[in-house]
Image (cartoon, rainbow, N blue to C red; front, side, top):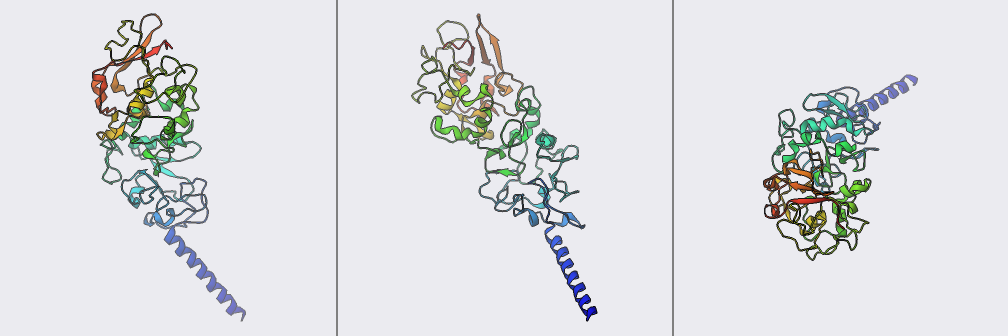
Length: 397
């Protein structure tokens, strides 16, 4: 009888072991998630990892890990996701995942990424998101993924509309002025010291951004205080830098020279002690060359030009698509980087800064033709027929 019990026990153990092996062979997942919410899980006790289907583990949340694919994931199958790497309304295939992910130490709790230009493996550390900048920039450069301009084979091309800027990001990121020098990187939560993009997969916001920036801008009425949510990403981060808060950029002194009715659209929504933006008008009928030399303003009209541009809702070719948006922050400012010190404008504008008479300081856009070209893409290029100067000092309030 004892021998029979032992045999029964041995058979039960074999069945349990076989069940465990089969389970691992099907799903490839153990029960011990690593520390990072986007890496794989557990141990797999040998076998060929390349034979696994990524969906076997990553289509459902498990512990502290979110779903990556499926209707709760980061790609097109999830209706809440509005932008994502890998185009289309489906999830990426295994081969598309392998464009970015190295699986040599898969299930070790750390995401390992492949730098396209060198094939170097970069480990993603959530505490140091800037560590994978070389990975991101290795595709977002002039030769795409080491010469492959469509690395996901999804019908989309790096450097071609609507992703024309994607081939220029590395070049702009390494310019003299920009968010890199403010301590930002690619990935983060939209706060100082992190980055603007949610992850490398997808987001509910345009541009795989971590907070909303409404793109394209299709709001059919002029900017007012109720529209702040359309600029959440910029405004939330800029609130930490007094010189570029929404009030500093769009505000004026109440009853000052700049507190005027902008073409009947209403007063600026923010009143501050003194105008701060240097993107503003000068008009005092002085006859100086940097005054209103073309006579298109009425006497006494001084405009906060940031606010004016949002009020008049001129057209903009967002992502090089004709007439796809109204004007926006990105119409003039190169957020990835610029060699133009004043305002980090697109260098193609040819903007420069000058000293005038006495304490006067002003700026001039010299390359008017570029205003209609990518990436600026103004559809109503008013600067071909009106003044191109902007006023720095003194504010003349």
